[in-house]
Amino acid sequence: MRFDLITIFPEFFAGPLDHGILRRARETGLVEVQVQDLRVFTKDRHRSVDDRPFGGGEGMVLKPEPLFEAVEAMLQQSFGSAEQPAVRDPKTAVVLMSAAGKLFQQETARRYAELDRIVFLCGRYEGVDERVAEYLATEEISIGDFVLSGGELPAMLVIDAVTRLIPGALGNEASSQNESFSARLASSRDSFQTGAQHAAPLAVNITRMTNEDRRFPEVTNHLLLDFPHYTRPADFRGWKVPEVLIGGHHAEVANWRRAAALEKTQRNRPDLLLR
Image (cartoon, rainbow, N blue to C red; front, top):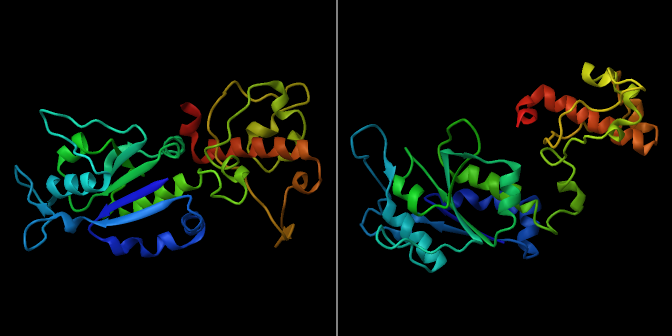
């Protein structure tokens, strides 16, 4: 997998790329990351990458010319014109990081992990010329309903999320399968066969389950947040680890974790259960 980052602040990426999973993935050749200074593709003596918006208004807008030329140089292809649109490589994405884009989610990360190459366009100022979004980028992506100063930090978040899903990037491949937005609810009566009585500290939805009816409510195939994690000491300032987690009964632990993940999802991200 190759990631290309087009930015006016190439030095921004010196730190984030040199730590943890990303560093190891780069060192082992699982991913390649190239950072390109957008100003290299300017033609005036001031190396201008932005200009005032047509129609007036505050702020500056990134111009289309250097962005198109930067991507075309990296991919070694022309992105055509209005008369002759470009032919796209389905294994390559050109992603514009923008507060106006579609929300980045775990399913997006999984889709990106199947690609060969992703080029990130890191916006700045008031944004980029709309022709970049329409005719150069394959997708316009946002990481949340808030505004940042530029697309560099969002691009790094996406790279981190995608890299984790590349086989070999994690020490334990199960780590990417058993975390938030990966687990899904079960629909059978066998989902919570035992251990529900240990869920007393959790929400009433869990404690209501009886021996006669331990099935989960009729909501299936929804993403869940990760279940709560505990480690030593088992008793910290009087706050104790749930007994089920130290009892050694794997089936009860599995059921408790699924129930706890559901409760946490209902509390923190109920919107996931409505999709």
